[in-house]
Length: 124
Length: 387
Ligand SMILES: [Zn+2]
Image 1 (spheres, rainbow over the protein chains, first blue to last red):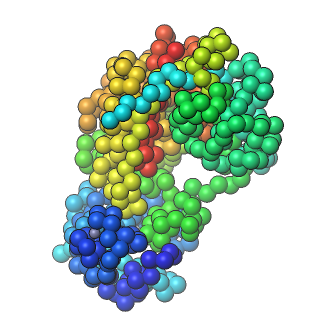
Image 2 (tube, rainbow over the protein chains, first blue to last red; image 1 turned 90 degrees about the vertical axis):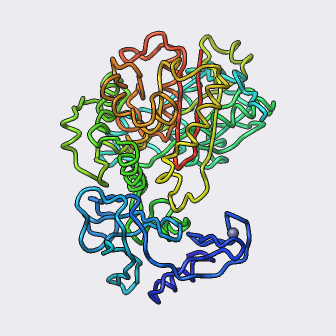
Image 3 (tube, each protein chain N blue to C red; image 1 turned 135 degrees about the vertical axis):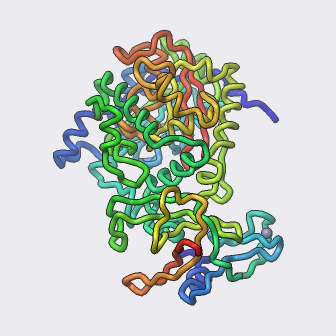
């Protein structure tokens, strides 16, 4: 992890997902970093986000690359309502047909090693 | 805006590559025929022989990203007055810049990669730069560690945004295999059909095994000379007519250029810079070379660089065709999917060979202009080669 990543993962472990937010212009920033790409301000804080968004794209891996991910498993790209794009996984019931545009909401998954990951389920 | 001045300031006078087919057989049998600098050195010898010049004519050296600069120069016995390290398309660009600036007159570009025998990981815990990169923190925890995964995400957006059909993607693999079947230097030469494509297993759905590039050992080298020197040194120089470039860096880690833009603004800007620079248009191009680590690069580039309207690549692939006998010959050596995965370098030497007219059964008749394009990670590059 880099110098700016701590607060993100801490917020996940506390099940209160927060993203870095620019105090200069109000833009949410993800991944976190030293300055705001919109206005170049260094001034920022961490704000909880709604955890709501929509699926921009999705894939299904059929190859075993990682011990924790036995294929087949999905990866989704979510556009959060606050703006940033977020890579994650869809848990629970999968949509029929095209996943793009489906509304999703945040859940917290505990991995076998105890690590907490932000994931998504289809919104009601 | 000042126009680039590099038009026909430099020409390629020599090309060479290693024994991709032989080394494929040897590495599959567990042998290690060479290391990365070894492959680059073999390609260098071949390019020097092809150029027909003495080694002491060379005064510039650019090495690919996979070999250390100093060791490469040491092995090739080259003391030079200018040097650098870059990927395929940047190497050609930097050579033109150095020649234009007067830093060097005859520059050799060398690339070698033992990615097969050396076990380079393109997916898994050590892929995508491992822990050194943001993607390891913001993609890998969710199981996204491969370039294939990124291009599969892009393919889904492409299907949704522009109506591209999954089955049409198979036309790319089939066409390029058709070219490869005519190329004795291609590793995969057995012709395939759309049915073979549809039967090929998914690696990262919607991309199948046949949408992925090979992973093989080898090397490529080119000799680029100042235009005047090129005319005296070579009977058949191939000129760099124009180069265009456009980079999408904003929100790159969260994949916005890939998923929201499909790289289109960068492709269009690079295309217009290079076509305007060369004074020609897509209709004047005889052979298209497209960086194809994955097949999906090809339809995206055909639309983005102006060979058809947006959303029309599927029809172009089906009806006009990009394979042997097709109206838009593309990746005529077989590309990264079927010839050899040399990270863009092999496309440059195929461009040169087509323009020289030495491609045998896969030769495109009266080839006058070749267009190379790449759009890796939203960095669009476009080079027009001519005689
Ligand atoms: Zn700001």
